[in-house]
Length: 127
Image 1: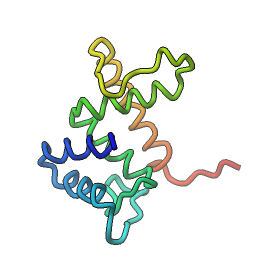
Image 2: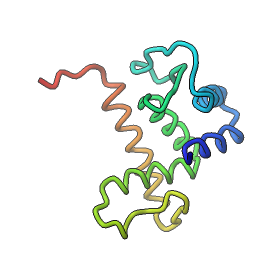
Image 3: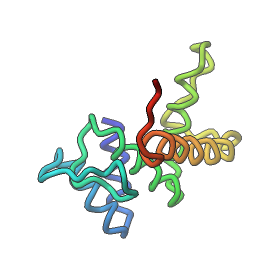
């Protein structure tokens, strides 16, 4: 629900054709055939909730273009994953301005590092 709200908000305020196309596919639930987008930096043609690459690529684009809501929500997700004390969990809905500079940095680097390490660096043989 919150994810769709973020997507609709961004779609209504963005002129980037790639982002517009991707967001409309997400909101419609996909359609068409999917390219193997794991070896490129382009968006997949179809994005569903199980397409981690497409979602991460979208978040990276939103973060790079300065979308405060996407930046904050990505940061809060990362932070809340590792937080052990429930009373220290961050609120997805309220941007804490005293932490926002850190949120921008962490969100950008975490998204970029994850994309690079998992999808853009080629195949790994871990054995």
